[in-house]
Length: 114
Length: 167
Image 1 (tube, helix red, strand yellow):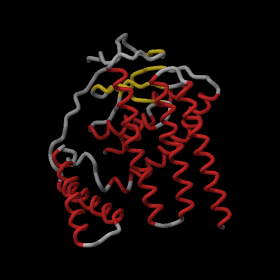
Image 2 (cartoon, rainbow over the protein chains, first blue to last red):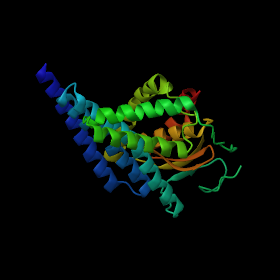
Image 3 (cartoon, each protein chain N blue to C red):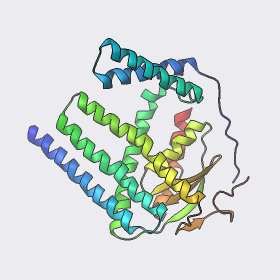
Image 4 (cartoon, chains in turn green, cyan):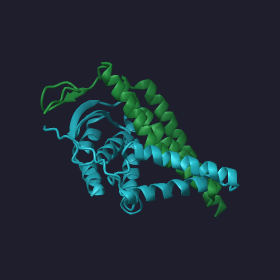
């Protein structure tokens, strides 16, 4: 039983590390601000989630586990806000995304009227 | 696409005030672990301050139903975690294969309340591969890393789930 929990938590740590490396690599590799937010999103969700899940498995059924779970909960509420803030500010100050724009009407971002 | 005016509900709901205060006190008691008189007073003070700030910013208006927080929302979170894992895998694959084709598009959100809209925008941003760039009324401008991820948002499954959540 102990061995099984150790194996599961080490698998979680391994998955978290892989996600961290993927996210860091993506931040360097992807072309512009908007795409790099996606790579940061991998670190915010999968990497943190797996590493803390591994920690919860290690600490067992205790108050520490509950606190660790709360960290994930609060992080999942706050990390999209930071991602959205970066994207919104980049858009506000005129950073052009290297992306195909698919609009039904030919208007720029922020010029939606009715 | 048309744009609706989102009206802010400013009526304070007493049930949500009580539930919110109870949740804050419970959270403080669990996280603190020290129950001397001085620290309990500090706890009461900080809980009171947080509830006062929430009251002041008109978020205790019954848009968030506290009883839902324990019934419907965890089921939605489980679904969201599944979606997050799926899109994490897809984003990671796109990064390592250097195979991406970013696109920007608009989606229309069908939520009525401000909290529903915030929930939808946050859910889009939380799944890697899609980011809400700009919000105006109920129109979201979304940046997606690949076409498949954009299709996931455009299919409107997440939109429907959140709209069901707020009723």
